[in-house]
Length: 396
Image 1 (cartoon, rainbow, N blue to C red):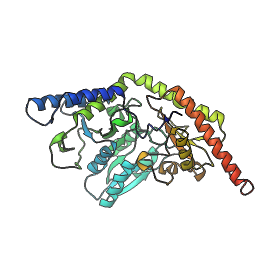
Image 2: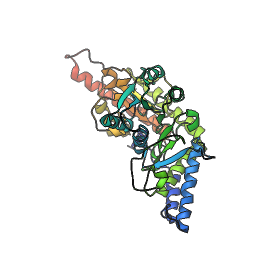
Image 3: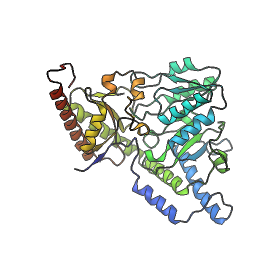
Image 4: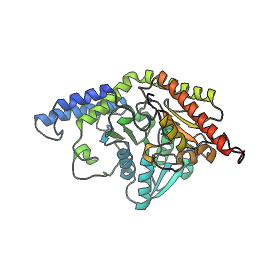
């Protein structure tokens, strides 16, 4: 059978048009953009044109000396580390992150704790929405930074970042948002969000792996993680990869040109999948269903079935999906996101994440729905047979 890829929140397959743009970039013979000779200046122009295009699409202010900055990184993980470790300053101090952040935010938050900062967690509702009132309660005079993602990587639930940004602005505290799962899926306007810093990465919207960006307001004071070069104002030293940057830029330009059609199409595919499974199976829960969600992400729970067993069975059936963040794959621990939402073990133990891409088709979704339903039925039948006469309370 043909395998069906539905793990696009982990990574997307590169768009052939992006690969072609990068191929042409490599063939152009670009050199080090920091070199002062003719070839270096030519390369620098290509790099800066890509930077400007990315900034324009993301709603940055670029026209004067108070312009926003687009700092290219190796991806979302580096961008998030640079934001948290770079913006927090020197300890002691107080930092706040939401309880549903990606490991690439929670990791540097833990590092801040080791360095002497106090790190607090902002609660979320049962639907997975960060609570503005709890942020107000947690803010202190020594709060240095707040970090809340724009859209959750596991449930797809969108967060009220503009409202949170207003609260932070009133307190004079910078707000960083991890927009990795939203950029290239929904319109994102950096200035309208009201945040100080925003992370993104190309491979989530059919660009190349190995390149991302941290967007910064001009007033943001940030300490670098790396040293030994003057590139990108010294915030991220090292020779920039022009081809990777061009790939990020081209992927973002393609999304901007096709954004309405992509959003409608992915929403329709997500709804097609959800409706087909709910029509065929009993005892199905969609986590975060009542909240605003990304157009391509669904978190499904099949109570009574172990998620790891289900994932292996689906892989055998030719459906690629996941149980949560790819950065935590291989872990047998229950999703911290679902736990933060207050969901019980009957939900957290049986939940999987399915995410469609711009290259997914209705035919694939129809076939995937059929395979998922058949797999769940088989597992429930096996569970019923194994538990018959021993534990009639088991949900099958």
